[in-house]
Length: 285
Image 1 (cartoon, rainbow, N blue to C red):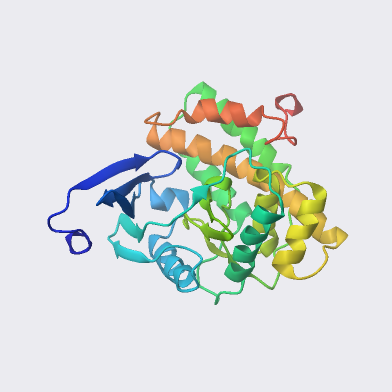
Image 2: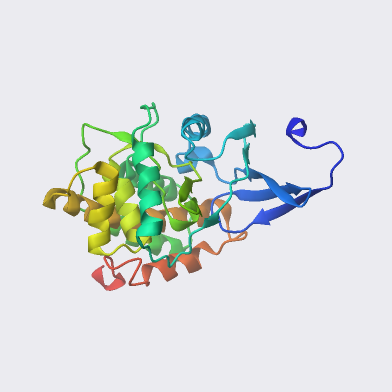
């Protein structure tokens, strides 16, 4: 990494607090941010993360100016060039000026060449639940695992389409940098070949799109009007996303402990948030 740092300038390193998964730092010199360092902080095997695939996809996306170029990497760390712009707030309310660049970036991403890495949200959740089942659990975690397993079993499944595209699969507002009319996509741990409707479902859900905005986004990303079947699939993927996030929080709690994120507090907060989770209720059990 020394090869990309200045020899004589004073270097400032500031932690970035918005991410949940890893430790990320902004590196500056000459009073200007220059680099972003991400140190992996999760068990890649347990969480189903392929670091080499992530790196390869980052390079594909950077070549199309969808994300920052990778300047250095090791087994557990990646350094990107610093990108201008601001991440979106969790309570983002889009208008045409912000939704259009985001959809343009997603459409360009979906046109990138196919890669070997696959992403199937149902298989991923099932794998996480299996890992959770194998861990030593308190009665509280046993109950929460039974709860999220029940939610998972109740999910309506979207059939996996024959036509898959390279998708980001985690387009929450903190993984979008908006710089004027340009949207950058960051955090590629979940990227892989998937149904493009999954990306649209996440944008609809965590970007709080109104029904007419979802139709506009669909048109901009896929260049066609959404069918009733497509809209139903998006709704089903939204439900799967909620279960994915709940399962992720339980798994992180079990494997990482409290550390800097109280995963159980977040689990209950998300479960009981009617905006994030209008689908699953504790009294359904």
